[in-house]
Length: 90
Image (cartoon, rainbow, N blue to C red; front, side, top):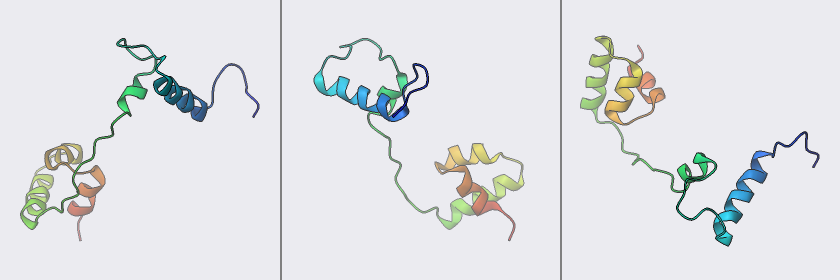
């Protein structure tokens, strides 16, 4: 694989970061060089529960009153696309 300049491809960065943690020669208690390495250590999973009919009705009412899609998504703990799908006119 040919490199341009001193930039590492993303896969090499991930392998390097993984090897640092496995061998134990990473920085012990300081901040990591790349904050995304620590952030991706344990992904957060949200439960996949279906919205009830009452929640969908409340979402549609709030959307009709002008509440933003982003706000509704955070209120109900769903993705913005879910709010769009549930509140679009049929």
